[in-house]
Each structure stands twice: as structure tokens, then as C-alpha cells.
Length: 151
Image 1 (cartoon, one colour):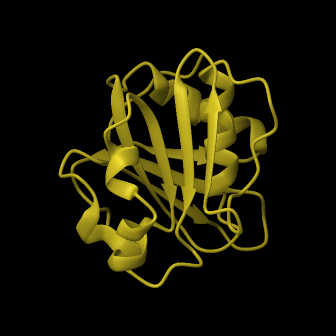
Image 2 (image 1 turned 180 degrees about the vertical axis):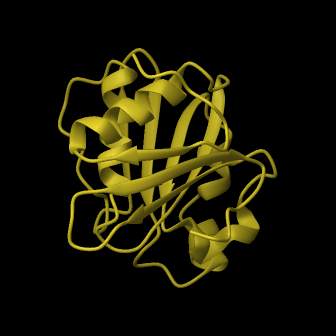
């Protein structure tokens, strides 16, 4: 198993590598954790959430909630997967009941979180995923309480 370290640059060369990074994070998460995922289209945000789901004991396919906005799963722990791509800002995010999801005990993983950063709690965990061109290589950095600006 991969050893987790806050702020470390993880290099992923495959889906399985990304899943391993996500799985290493799970043991560090409190009962209620909000994960703000950052990265361009195709960077691997949903792939990261798939790794979280596997580590959380969820045995069903995890797909991007781009059109449904919210997908909820139950395993060993609750996972709420939210995609803000189609929303235009904080007002729309709050209108979908975002604050209620934040109160749930479990993992709340939010793709395209930069669309409404102002509504995230100060203890949100920020996950930056950067695709390295045409290869399958990704750089993943996980930080507590701070948005990583250089990726």
C-alpha cells in the first residue's frame, strides 16, 4: 500500500496508480470530509473518486455526475460525488442543497470545485490533478486547508 503524505507530489502513470493515491488518503480522512478536486477536463478527477470509492468499500461503478450533478453511494462509508461543471456559481451550488451535503458524515468529493470555492468549508481538502500532456502521467497533490495555485 502507498504511504500517504500531505503536500507530496504523487506521480501517477496509470488508472491503478491514481486509485492507489486516492486509497492512501482514505485512512487520513475524518468522519466528515469535503474534498475539492481541481484539474482540467480529462485530468483524472473522476478516476480519483473511483479510487476513493474502492477504498470505501463501494462495489458499484463510479461515473462522472456531469449531467446528474450528484451521485450518492454507500459502502463502508458514505460517498457523495458532486460535479459543478454545468453550474455557473455559488448561487446555483447552494440551490442544489450543497450545505446539506456538507453536513453528512462521509466523504463529499466535488469536481470543478473552483466554480464555487467560496461555499467550501475552511477545512476542505484540496486535490490538484494535472495531466502531463499526451501521456497517461498525472501529478497529484493533496493539501489540507489551502488551494494549490501552481498546478
